[in-house]
Structure formats: structure tokens, C-alpha cells
Image (cartoon, rainbow, N blue to C red):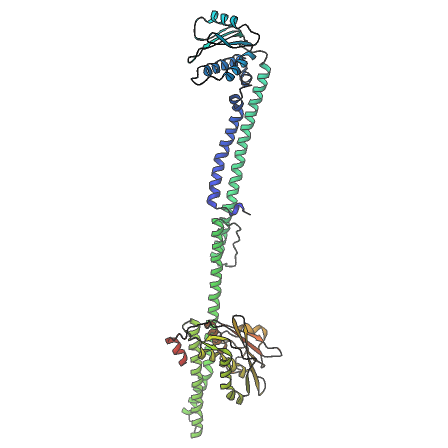
Length: 509
């Protein structure tokens, strides 16, 4: 349903101006038409209307009007219309005037019951030989008119009161009524015009000024930094669209500010995490170096042990720096992936078979369960292996007891493949599941009970996102943590590779 507020503002303004001009014109036209329509177009009663409107002239006004009409109709060069002539004669006869029309010395028409020859003689005797004349002698009226285009003469004679007395009261009453009617219509038109102007002004104000006021208030709130203020305007015209665009801008600003705040928070956490994870190995390096310098390692065996510890710590720091570099490239979007279509089940099976012996010695059993599926996905095999190794490394760190167990499952799901990494270790609190993929986040408050830098899952999320997939954390029924990954199925003929310098560099990492 079309509402007024949905109509274009330009159209509403044009319609308002049009109505404010046209309605007064229409009302005045109707007023004039109501007064003069009957006088101009009603032949059967016009002589009485004229007499009633101008009673001081009495019947003479009607007689004069009929005489003029007879002259026009007789002098027309067009074929003569006898019905119209007889109609005019009837109007004179109602005033007591007898008429005779003579053509070629023959009587064409005569007032019923009158002597045509007598009327012709009395009119000629009074007006003389003139072809056309009108004579008033007190109440007596004489009229003769000879057509200029044909042999047709009209004679009229009778007694008519020059000033009508019998119609004065009726004429005064009708004149008063018409005057009252005209004044009433005029007053009503003025009041209607005033009301219409006020109504249209308020209507335009409500649909124009109110949205502008709301827009001004919203801009003032945003100027003060209140991005929570909602601009709610229901119209769909130019102002409504402007307000909607303004509110969209507000939401974008709010989203940008939230992203900026989150970025700042992540930056602070990143700096704090780097500081924490570098401080411990640096302290160890400093301690071992001081032990060698101060002679604490007095025997070759101790010196060898200190050097080995320094080397191991330096390697751990190198791995941390490599992870930081990889995470930074992923976070900035500066890493491209060499995607190849691979059967994902067979790929995970091969990785598990390769790393299973070493993990078994560390007390972790890794298995791939479920039926073999022929699903093909486009992945960067090197980077996806890094994801699997990070997940297995976390399971190894958070296992309970001397041995742990990790299960991988591969399940087709429509146009995607779902890969679950299920362990039965320590798990994570429900409120921490959504934060596990943040950089440097670890569920332990002290950040020192379990070795790690909190970058593994953050890197895994960046890699999965770069390959068009998703990753999330769930609770494992019975205890533990499940990492669920989804990857889109590969196209029928996917591109072979997209080797870039960044990809080669990342593979070297």
C-alpha cells in the first residue's frame, strides 16, 4: 500500500503548491457557475430569473431580452429555425404580448386567438414605415422587425407594466437568498482555503522538518561520540533515504571503532605475549652465559651442558620468531597459497601414518577413523600439514596422564568437507572456546604451567581462512576438546598451482 511518506518529496511539494493554487480557482469557478449557469443556459425560465434578479425593471427586462433574441435569430444568414422563433414568441406571449410573423404577405405564425391583421395595422400605425423599431408608450409595447436576409417580418403588440409590482416580494426574497448563498459560499471557500493551507503546511512540516530534526539530533549525538544512537525514520522518500544512509554510516563507524578497539587490544596482547614468551628464554640464555663467564661451569661436562642449553633455548626462540613472522604475514594477508586438488582423507591418512611412531613414543596415539571418502578439496598441502601438526601439538601438551588419544574424522557435508580433530585431554572452559583462536591466548591464567606461546590455533585459523575454510572449537562429549574444520569441495577442473614468492618463502619457514 502506497503511503504519503513514501512519495517523492519533490512530488509532494509540487502537489502541495498545485493544490494551494487550484483549489481556490476551482471554488471561485464553482461559485460563478452556480450563480450564472441558470441565467445563461436555461431558456424556459430566464425571463423570470432576470426579473427576479433585477425586480426594479420588472417584465421589461425579459421583453427586451426576447426582442433582442428574435432579431438575432431572424437576421441570421443560416436557414431559419422556426421552432426557436416560436419559442421566443411564446416568451413574449407570457408577458401579455401578441405576436405575428408574416412571410411573402402570408401569416406564418400568430398568437392563438389574436387578429393578425389588427396587430399589423396597430403596430404600423404606431411605429411608422420603419423596418425595425421598438416603442414603449407607458405600459403599451409595440415592436416590428424585418429580416435582412429574407422576406420575413415580425409584429408584436401588447400591454406590459414597465415596473413590475406583483413580483417585488418574490424578487427581493430570491435576490436576498442568492446574495446570502454567494456570501456563504465565499466565506466557506475562504475558510476552506485557510484550513487547507494550514493542513498542507503542517503535513509538509511533519514529513520534512521532523526527519531533518531527527537527523540533526543524530548528528549531534555522533559528534559527541555516541555511536549507539539509532536514527529511526520510517519514510522512504529522499529524506528517508538520506536518514537511512546516515544510520548506515553510523553503523559502519561503530563497526570500524569496534574493530579498531579490538585491533588495539590484540596489539597490546601481542606485545604482552611476545614480551612474556621472550623473557623466559632470554633469562635462561643470560643465566647460562653468566654461568660460563663466571666459572660456575668449571668442568668440560658442565660447559658442554650449558652450551647445549643455550643452543636449545636459541632454537626455541627461533621457532617463536618464525611463528610470529608467519602469523604476521597471514594476518596482513601477504601470504598466498599454492592450492592443489587432493583427496583429503588419503592426505590426512598419510600424515598420520608418517608422524604416528614419533608421537607414540611421546605418549599420544593419533588415528583416522571412519570410512574412506573420495572427497576432493583444494589445499596448500604444506600449510595444511602445519595446521594438523599444531592441533596434534596442542593435544600432546594438554593430555591427561601418561598417554593421550587423538581421533581425526572426515565427513562430507553438502558442498563442503568437515574434518574433526577430537582429543580427550584437559579440554577448555565453555567461555574460552571462542577465544582459543586469538593470538597468545591460553586457558591457564598463569601462562606458565604448560609450555606454549598461544600462536598455534591463531595460525591454524588464518591458514583455514586463507584456503576458504572455517575452524571452531567444541567440547568433546565425555571431556576434551574438538576442533572442527570445514573446507569447500574442489571444482571439477581447479587450477593446478599458484606459486608465488610469498608461498615459496612460507614453505621455507
